[in-house]
Structure formats: structure tokens, C-alpha cells
Image (cartoon, rainbow, N blue to C red; front, side, top):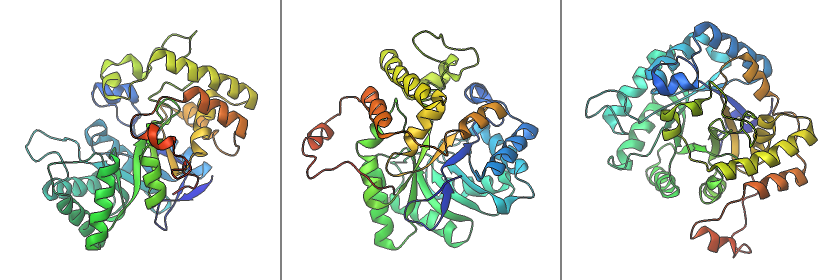
Length: 346
């Protein structure tokens, strides 16, 4: 297993992280992800640790907290061997303060997560989304308090826009508070808008990319193509999952999958392994969050490491997945002499 520095921190993380959205299966959305109970989750953790994958990502909203509970039981007795990342901000409860990044909500959320996970500290705590109604100063001072109290080791955010992240970094620097070292963001061969602004920001400010849904919301599993109908059991069979996931037009998807299948055949690898390997060669990417409903899927995804695509294969995939840029990014690309594409990982 390869390990990379997480942004501007001293923490090294494995290039693959196991996501726990498949743990629990509470509610329509997370049932579509998976329904692993404690026994199966423990087996998946065993396989991960054998492969050197020691980081596990969760969130309070995953199966209404049940995913954190299952993860805590699956790592029981070996907490010192794993890294736990989890998230809060989204609504978890019916009350007016059961959502957001206020001191009130974050304090309750972090304490509850620690209890569900059965631990006294979280290695990486991330805001699941930006809360525009809470002052950034309130949010960051609260998070800094938890770091100083030893309940959180490192901070990150998720699904922020460029200005959300840059403002947060600037405010933290102004007051000497703990900065975000990770940004959990969507990035895949069928979703490359991370490259427009978030990647240059991450390279400049040394924020590690923690990539969610690297297989394009289950579209790059090798089970979908021009000639293959949507398979039974896919999360894309759930309208709820479709509605909350990143949209992708069919023809664009098929174009990318056509190229993926060609490159995968050249490499002697599977389509998902090829898609994941492409991401691991992208600037600022620290780790990819992989999901697995079962042992077979997990072992398949672990096969994405230990080899690299050739420059020609990378170029083929980039050409197939290229999309028109929005303003001002297309304009900046035309001035590449002074706005070069990032080349170094954060």
C-alpha cells in the first residue's frame, strides 16, 4: 500500500480509504449503497488491514448513525491500528439546531460520533458541507477547541466551493486556529470539475484531496456500457440515489466507458481498477474513498494500486472525458503560460 502526506500535515494516509456508506443499510438511500452488518464489516476491515489499508471514512448521516456504530464494533480492540475519518453538518434530527456548523450542532455531533464509534478521538473530522448561515469564525473556533482538547487530530471539509475553502483557511490563519488539511470532494473520470478551481487551490494551499465516489456514483464499475443495461442491485436503480448523486449524461458516460474498456484491456485490468488508477495519478489527490458491498468488490478495488497507466493511456482517458469549461476557467486555460495546470500533489 502506498501512503501519501495529507495536505499540509504530518499525517500519512493510504491511497485507498474504505468508505462505510455500505454499513447498516438504514433508509432507502443507504440500502441502495449496501447493508453490511457487524460481521461482514469486520471481515472487510480485516481484508483492508491485511492489504495495508488502515483508513475508514464515515459520517453521522450514514444510515442515521448506524454506520458509525458498526464501524466502531468492527475495529474494536484495534483502534490503534486504524485511522477514522467522519463528518457532520447535514441534518440529523427534526430540531432547528439539528443541522449546520454552529457551535451547538458541532459540539453535539462530535460528542455523539465519539460515542457511536466507541473511541475518544477522531483522526480526521470533516464538515460535510458549508453552512452559510453560521459565521466561519464560530465554526473554526469550535473545531479548534476540539483539536486542542484532543478529541480531533486533523480537520477537513467536504463539498466546499473554492471561496468557501479559501475564506476558511484565511480566517484560521488570521486567528491561529487549526486549518483544514483535507477536502473531501467529488472527482472521477465522468466528473472532472474538481480540476477547474479546487485542484489549483489545493495545490497552492496544500490541501489534500480525499475523493468521494471515484467511480462516478457507480457508473464506472464496468457493469454499465452502451451494450449493458443497468444491472439489478445498482444504486442507480434507486431514484433517491440518482437525485442526490452527480448527474452524468448517457452519451458522455458511454464515450468515457468506451475508452476505459480499451485501456483496461490493454492493461489487463478491470474498468474500475483503471478508473481508480487514473485518479491516483492526478495532482493533489491524497486518497480515494472506495466502497464495497462485499469481499469480492473490495478485493477488486484493491487491485487498482501497485501499477500505473502509461502517459499515452492517461492521455486517451483525458481526451475521452474532457468537457467544455465554464467561465472564467476556459479563459484562464487560454493563458496557460501564467495559469499552468497543477503538477504536484498537495
